[in-house]
Every structure is written in structure tokens, then in C-alpha cells.
Image 1 (cartoon, helix red, strand yellow):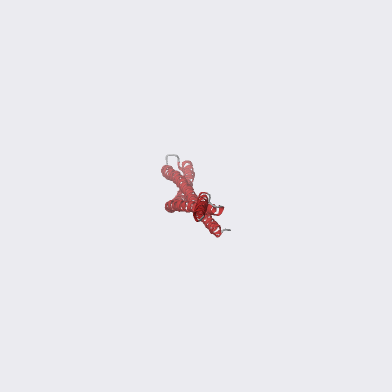
Image 2 (tube, helix red, strand yellow):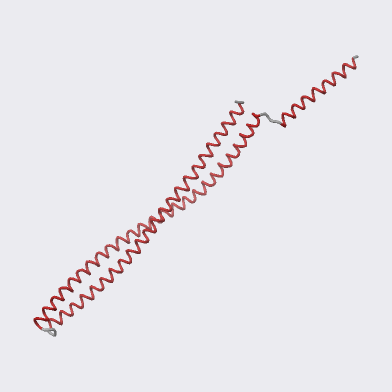
Length: 210
């Protein structure tokens, strides 16, 4: 009788131990929804940290681009300002040459009138008429030289304006690149920080069980 009772107790103990082991095994195989949430939250946090690290690397690379763009921007501004100084100088030269050309033209007109009077009064071969023709020729030479200077100044002015406009386009392009690189990466970093904060909050809540 005693031995039968011992055997029965042994069988019950083995069965109970089996049940416990089976429950533990099932629990390890099938995590509860809370455990699943916690695992998912941890995975999200790991991914967020990776994204954040990647965005910071991108931001640092873009910061180098920004520094390069700033140097380009500074150089382009210096070039644009130098071109503007050249334009101002060309305008002064052009105005000066035009004034000289106009003065020469007035001298030519005066010499023509004087020559006509001297031809009429003293004859075409007179000393006065010859002197007038010499003055007229000299004034025409001066007037033609001033016109060449004006044409040269116009070419310089147009060239400097084209360079100034090209530099201004470079400046505008550098400004756009600067804003784009800086703003987009900062947005990505801010978004990843928000995601990380949210996922950590979810993890704390899931650990508390509500």
C-alpha cells in the first residue's frame, strides 16, 4: 500500500513537472503581446539610432559642402564686386571719351565753317584755307581716335556686364545650394529625433504594461 502511494506520488510529481516545463517552453515559444511590443519597440529604437547616425553623417558631409559653398559664395561676391567696379570705370571712360568725341566734332564743324569762309574770302589755295584744312584734318583724326576709344569702352562694358551677371547667377546658385543642404539634413535629423523619442516613450509604456 505504501509503495503504491509512493509510486502514485512519483507519477503525479513527474506529470506536474512536465506541465511546468511545457508551460515554460510554450511561453518561450509564444511571447505575450506585451513582450512582442517591447521587442518591436527595441527594434524600432535600434533602427531610429541607425537612421539618426546616418543623418548625422550626411549632415556632416553637407556641412563640408556648406563650407565649400560659403567659400565659393564669398569668392563669387568678390568677383561680382570687382566686375561692378570695372563697369563703373568703363562707364566713366565711356562718358569721358564721348565728351571728347563731341568736342572734336564741334571743332570739326567750326573748322568746316572757317574753311568755307576762307575759301570764299581768300581762295582755296590761300594760306588761311590751307591752315583750316590742316586743322580740320587734325580734328578728324582726334574725333576718329575718340570714336575707337568709345567702341573699345563699349566692348569692355558689355564684357564686364556679362561677367557680373554670370557671377550673380553663381551667387544665386550657391545660396540655393547652401539653403538646400542645410535645411534638408536638419529636417531629417529632427524627424529621426522625434521618432526616437516616440519609440522610447512606447517602450516605457509597454514595459509598464499599459
